[in-house]
Amino acid sequence: MDTIGILAYGSLIEDPGQMISDLIIKKISTVTPFPVEYARISSPRDGAPTLIPFEAGNL
Image 1 (spheres, rainbow, N blue to C red):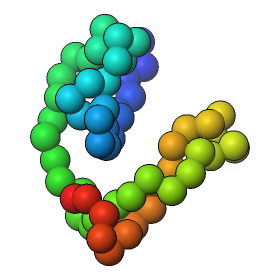
Image 2: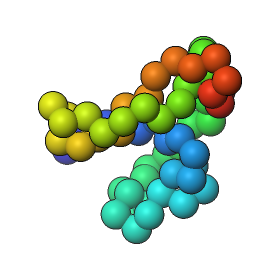
Image 3: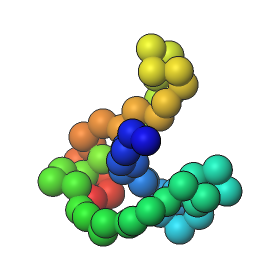
Image 4: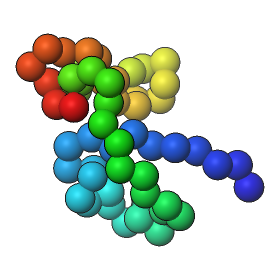
């Protein structure tokens, strides 16, 4: 089985939803090296959210 990582942001940290919760093996607490903010849905990545560096965003 392949392994992937998800950088959870906002409400996903506390409530990832049933589909993701069932697959979580390990959580690693981390801080992004720069503040980020949600920017838009990415069409080339099948609607995945896109985070961008943003001075007033969250770490």
